[in-house]
Image (cartoon, rainbow, N blue to C red; front, side, top):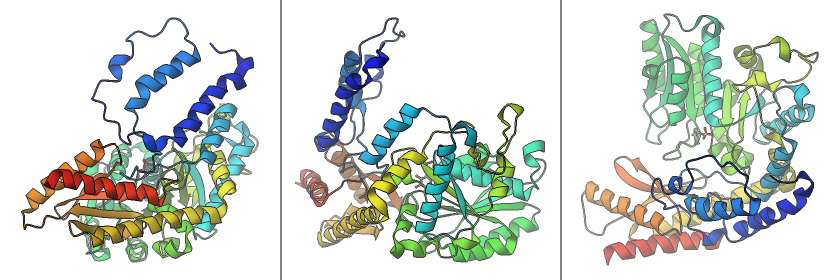
Length: 473
Ligand SMILES: *Cc1c(COP(=O)(O)O)cnc(C)c1O
């Protein structure tokens, strides 16, 4: 056990470790290549009876755990969507842990509640939303979307389902074929049933088509079902498609259906005025979510959930037990009523550190830098005869594949690209992921780690060419 009086001394080697880790992060293999069970077998089965020194714990951290880590803050992490961070966010997390506050209601830490209110409003305004939107910080986009689905369900059921449970009504949820899997999970948890998700066709740009949506809702109404919520996406996970909010909002208004906008990744781009066209029509939507923990230099977890009508949100989630009753109800925000969790971390602090330290202009410069790197990378792909630019650049997303000079079958080309991706990731130099696009296996690239520079993109290019060279020689 540590002596509390020697905190600074005990922290020193750990701060030094963090410093050298971040300095040398480019020397680590981006993706861990350990085999399943290999970490587990190095950890004793029995709980330790006696305490160990921090130095021996740190040694095991380095020797046992670090080889099993994938380095999400490596500038050559281009897989999935980023979950980037910054030193500002890291330092704020240290303070958050030191305060160890549980910010469920205003009284349990007034500063946490009021700072949360302020930073969310900063972001709302900077991203181009009207003042009638209000928001709350949640853990993940999955939770925010679940909140939206539950609120929409309560609204359509006159706020009775929370009491009676779902009765005979069949509630319907509409999303496109490109929508994120968190919607399926949320619909299941909300008791609506995944069979009641209606997947709407997309157009040539992979945007949900309003005509198909209108037809689906009309047909459900004719069959006595209850249309509840439509979920559109800005920046779909596979291919970065951007739904058109305005055309979908018209259908939602016509049928009085909730409209939720999932901008988990791409929402950060709204901090750039040149990307605010993405939310044209959002004043006609009901809720919106984006993750500062993806591309806004704020370490996981941190989700901003905006709603048009807070009263409906609170009505769906508030529970007021005697032991939590206070004299400040109505004067301040008690965020336990704004979502699923009762206990809440002080997440606003890290957002505040990031925004204050960068300033809006500093954040915009970094985002534009990433977008420029993606544009350059896409140009490079386009210029190489062995590569085919498949999608993008869209924001900081590009997708490509190897293109054989011989006219081979789709199956053969797909197999080649699957093997190419596997080799690239085993190299440890970069980490990429894939998706299927019109039957083609394509390799996705996100250029979004906070500190990525042009040299890192050169390493990405060199690795791609080297692994192709190894395969075609
Ligand atoms: C990442 C992502 C999610 C899920 O985000 P979590 O915060 O991990 O729950 C949902 N929707 C989209 C479009 C995403 O990109």
